[in-house]
Length: 99
Image 1 (tube, rainbow, N blue to C red):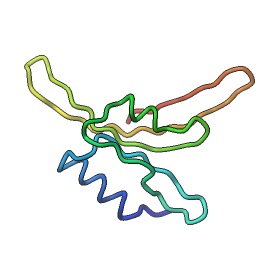
Image 2: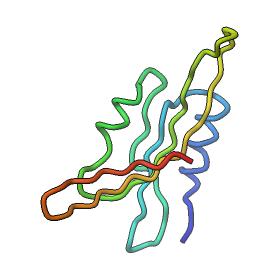
Image 3: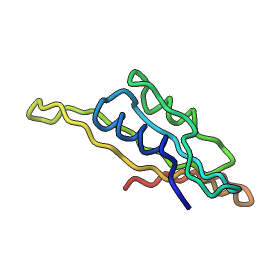
């Protein structure tokens, strides 16, 4: 399995230039490539990321979370999210892993 250059470039733009809030990745089963599925602009938020995730397929995402500490310092952390849906007899489980 390989990662496309678009994935690498989009991540570096998010990390260093702050032009993206999140990036959603998908795995193409035929080519065995990790590809960019969606890129969120810097003005979008976590709810936009949630809305872009499918209800019936797996995705991986990175989200740039901005926050202010108790000392009034502006910080940013990038979270990796593994998104997958498990449908059991009468329940729908959506699990998000933060690493």
